[in-house]
Every structure is written in structure tokens, then in C-alpha cells.
Image (cartoon, rainbow, N blue to C red; front, top):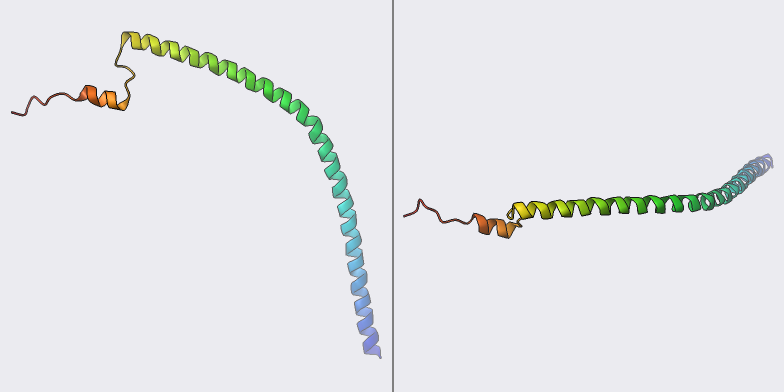
Length: 105
């Protein structure tokens, strides 16, 4: 009889322990739900500012890069006007360097 009471008491204590853990898990779940809601609201607020500033930065970078590449193209055309062989591709370069070997009889 006392063995049955001991087993029942142990199982009752285990159930109470599990109930306590479930209560803490529910509390943690509620806290995480509130935090997720808060994070979502903060994200929506920041997203507007971030997208506006990012678009502005990207537009200014594009304008700057367009200017740089325009300058590079004009420099290349000026160099080609003076030195026509300055920017050859590989096949043109190989064809240019193919000269007859004067040492062969």
C-alpha cells in the first residue's frame, strides 16, 4: 500500500513539475508574441526610411558611375586617335605580332 502511495506521489510530483514547465513555456510564448509584434511594427517604420534613403543613394551612385564611364570612354577615344593599336583584343594582337622569322633560311 505504501509502495502504491509512493508511486502515486512521485507521479503526482512529476505532473506538477510538468504543469509548472508548461506554464513557464506559455509565459515565454506570450512574451515572444509581444516581441514579434513590436519587431514587426518597428520594421514597418524603418522600412519606409530605409527604402527612401537607399533609392536616393543608388540614384546618386548611378549618376556618378555614368559620369565616370563617360570620362573613360572619351579618354579611350582620345588615346585611340593618337595610338590606334593601344586597345587590341587578343586575336588582333596575335595577328599584329605574327611577323616572318628572318633567321630561317
